[in-house]
Image 1 (cartoon, rainbow, N blue to C red):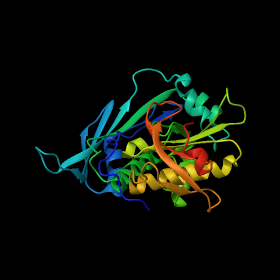
Image 2: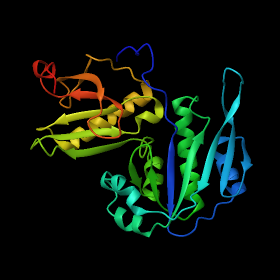
Image 3: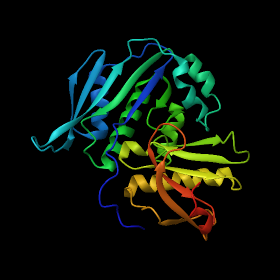
Image 4: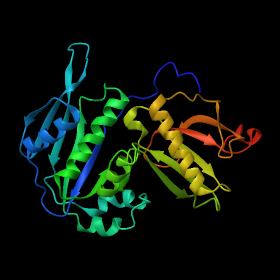
Length: 278
């Protein structure tokens, strides 16, 4: 498509998610280690207890002062009761789970899961680890909902397993959000969330007359393209529009909606209009 930008615009963020439970979670370090080793090879249990730390011997990162450092996974029990209001934004931007409110209302306990010293791995490796850890936590039992921190949405644990079994490897990794523009009647905004975990911009599209379902697919697929290929769409370049014929101009801009970040803004207006500031 386009030639890569000579320097990355951003470093990858650490990925993280929260497993939410209705009952106190039963987490045993050795049990989780063994289950994860079936998926990822050599796994060592570094720490057990309220914080479980697992080292991935087959997923190592080289640093300037040390080579072959195993990446790690931290599984941390929250020491405070879960507050459902903390997930209000994620709840609003979860579109494919009709029972989300009921599930969240049941949740009382939170377990934070994150990578540690893994951002130097390749994107395919980090995705493989993320998905393996999510599978292991869900299959360990008791998970009522997952808050996908980087993507800003809630996931039905069983739907997550089914989606990945069907080959949808980016399900739950990226989320497409939808907003009406309150002071501009008829205008809508869609953006993706989750790309920053892989060091690429999210995608943003402001529109008024397009089919939101088609825009959602377009934004998601463009976000996936960036995760897979990097930040390779330069300012001033174009991408094919939804109809396959029109060309939509691209430019890196500050996001219109929080969180604050640089996004790839795609303008669906004709070229002469797109050249003007929005």
